[in-house]
Image (cartoon, rainbow, N blue to C red; front, side, top):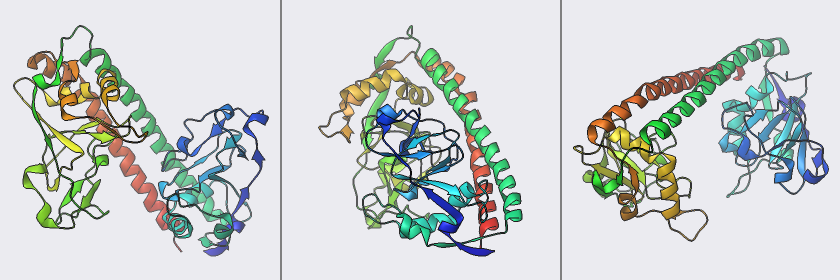
Length: 381
């Protein structure tokens, strides 16, 4: 391994472009970069934005220098312009192969250094002048080639699994909308099968998630995009503040009462018991009458367009960021609610897709862990 300054490893391309004065057809903002992914799957138009942007060329790396903790970077598959909150980086081939540079930027070694040198409290940002003089070890270029070939093979596998997830998510959404929310099914208010709603309590906690021998309170983000996220909790400052009746159990159906317009009313089902975690005042548990409501069915219809449109229309709040939905508004949601037998039959149609999704996400997780291990082993000093 030989140590190099970062400006010996990569160039910072700073060609500036006015969006209204370019023939380039694609604009990439930080919102278009997916954390931990090197692929660009979406973009906008230059006409969508104002102010000077950065020019990039196919093969360049777009690296989010603002909020580097989000781990946002991608290899450009086309020419275009990008946010000035990004850096356009290009490998210096006498020191670093272009095929290896994106993985180097994903490495824990580089990531930790990026966090250390970021400045600013609200939106910490990396300055090129500081980054340029940072030193990092790199193997010889022939070894870089071997490492890059191996990492790209793993990354391509991850990409294939991710594309499978997208297809399965579309299939699940189609079953949800066309089968579980069939227009011919009777509609009733949610309170016809939910006996009550249990709200947690706001208690003081540290930022870190609770260990097994500690107590924690759920953050609103515990109700995640694809399910329950147990690590999204805060360790209680006072363990005596833990309220046992608010603890989280397997099969609990949770809904958020406060979040952004798009996320308020998000639902999930808890996969197992978490006796050391408790509901917060923003995380509610739907107490389902199991003689008239099936939790898997309710989970899916509460994620439907029909439910979302009602939730977003009724959520209150003057601010642009946070919206609230009351327990009464939740109970009065009008949803497809046939008899219990029909609910179970319809919900069973989603189970195979959900299991396939779970298995595929596990493949992605394992492959991503393998990639991190290879990165750490290959690029460690």
